[in-house]
Length: 589
Image 1 (cartoon, rainbow, N blue to C red):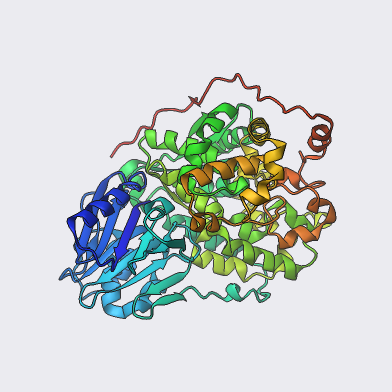
Image 2: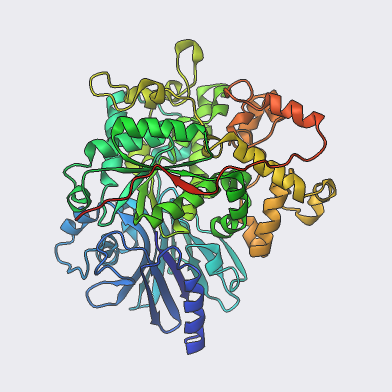
C-alpha cells in the first residue's frame, strides 16, 4: 500500500506551501517507505509515498501520460492492467507499473473508465490542460481514503486522516465505489452492482461456479514483483486462501522470481486456537510457516500506536487490529512486502455467529448487503492500516468484484444456517471446496466454527483488554461519558479508554464523525440486534457474545463478573513478543 496526498486549488503556490505539503506527506511515509514524489502545478499539489510491489525499478509516482499533461497519484493494485494495456494500442507507457494505465484510460474514455479497473485503488488525477481533476476509490473501500475542505476553497485528499486533519476545516471518509469530479463539483457512484439495491436474488447455488470464481480471485492476486506470503489463522477463510495459493503458485511469474515455496504467517497468544489450527493447516499444505507469539501486555503496550495508525475508536476494530499490527511488523522484518488475507467472507456469506438468529432469508440477505457496504469502516480499514503501518500490503480476494457478483446473486435460502440439515455458517462456501478427490483442506478445518480474529488469537486477549480498561477508567467517568462524548457515547470502560486515546490524536469533530457507532452483538449491525432479545442484553462485538451458539460463549464469564467487584488483574508472565519455530525466509531469484 502506498500513501497519497493531494491539495487541489489552494490559492497558494509558494515555497512555504510546498514545504507544508511535503511535511504532511511524510506523515504517510510508513505506507510507502520505498520512494517519495511530489508534483506541483500552480496551486495543485500531488504527493506520493511509494510501496513498490509491481515494477519496483521504474514505477515511481506521480505517473503521467505521454506529454505529461495528465498526472496521477495512486494507491493500489490494478490486477487487469495487462489486458487494459492491450486495449490502449495507441498509447506509450513510461513504466511497467500496473497503475500506469490510469492516465491513458482517462485520455481514451474520459471520466467513465473507473469501472474498467479490476483491483483495489484510490487515486487523484489532474488534467493540467484545464486544471480539472477526478478522485476515485475502489468498489468496497479496500484502500483507505479521506476528503477534506480548506477555508481557502481547497480540496484535500489523503490516504489517512493524519495527512489532512490539521489543515482542513471539515473532512470525512471518501465513500467507496464513488468518483469526485471537479467539473460537476460533486460525488457520483461509479460502482452499481445488482446486489447494491438489496433486492432478493434467486440464482440457484452451484458449488463449482462458486469455487471457480474464488479460485480466479486468488490467482489474479498472485501478481507481484516482490516476496509475498499468506496470513493463516487456521480458520476457513484464510485456510482456503492459503490452499488455493499453494495449489496455483507454481507456474506464475512470482514463482519464477521467488520460488514455489509458499510462506504463511500466524499470530496469537501462547496456546491460542489460531496457532494450533494454523500450524495444522500449514503442515497439510506444506508451507514454510512463521508463528508469532505475543503477550497481553505486548498488545496493551501497542494500543496507542495502533489507534494512531488505524484511526478509529471502534472496539472490535482495535481488538483485532492490535495482533495484526504486531504481526505485520514481524512479517516486514523478514523481507516480505505483500500478503494475501481472508477478509470479507463473513460479510458475503453471513459467517458471523449472530446470523444463526436471522429470522428469514430476506433479512439475512439485507444484513449481508449492509455488512459489505460498511466494510470500509471495519475490516477493510483494519486490514489496510494495520499492515500499512509497517509498509506491508494486504490483498483480499473475497472482495474481488467478480466474486462478489457471483456470491451475492445466490438465493440467500442457501446461505441460511440450519443445524437440522447440517448447515453451519458459510455452509455453501465450505461445500464448494469439499472435494473428496483433491481435498483443499482437512475436513475438521473446512467445517471449523467461525472464530473472530480478536477471539482466535486467544480468549484472554479481550479479557485482558477489559481488565486493563477497568484499572484506568472509573465508574464516574463512564457515568458522565454522555457529556464528554455526546457523539457515539462509549458505554463500556474499554470503549471509553480507546476514545480518550483517539481524541488525543484526532481532536477535531470531523475525526470523531468518521467512526461508526451503534449497538452490536458478535459484530452485527444495530438492526440485527433485534433478532434475539437475549443477545440484545449482552452487547459486545466479540463472537463469544453469541450466547447459545459460540462453543466458548460468555455466559460463565458474565456471571462471574457480576459477582466480583474488584477490577481483575492481568497476569501474564509468558515471554514477550517472539517468533516461534519460524524458519528463515529463504528467497532466491
